Amino acid sequence: MISVQQQGFGPGINIADYEEILFLLRVAREHSQFSIRESGKNEKDEQFAKFINMLAGNVKAILSMLNLKDMVERSTGSSFSFLGANQASVALQAEEYQRRASDIVRSIQSTLRLAEAPFEQLKAENTSAASKEELARYNKARDHFAQLIKENKHCSPIDPSARKFAHV
Image (cartoon, rainbow, N blue to C red; front, side, top):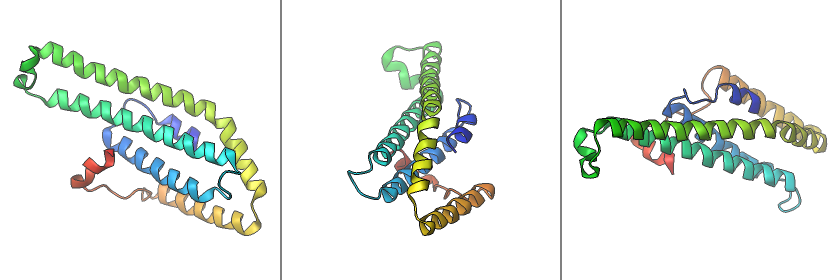
């Protein structure tokens, strides 16, 4: 799944897409806590949960840069008059926010490439340690999620009035 996300993860994705990615990372973070069998004894699972936190933090940083870029682009000339900035300077500032967002995206892509092998190893270790019942439950949940993605029903739509809470 990590490599699938990586292919479509780029600077061309809009704010709503990053909000969806952040939502899914938060769900993954919550679910990763459920999968830790014995707190303090499964270091790799706990490290994976921290990795998910790091990814979520990076996506929040991207959202912040894109929101700042949009705010600058939507501003009227008078919004930046206290800085003595002209339209060219304002446009350069918007481009700078976009560059920062793009840099963070490249950083995430690099991190995801590094994470592929350890993720596969963790998945194999957890699969071999799981009982038949646990594997059946996991496969059922994974198949259900795959079906939701296929039907584009994997994420609840965010009410526009609640968007401000998506950045918390």
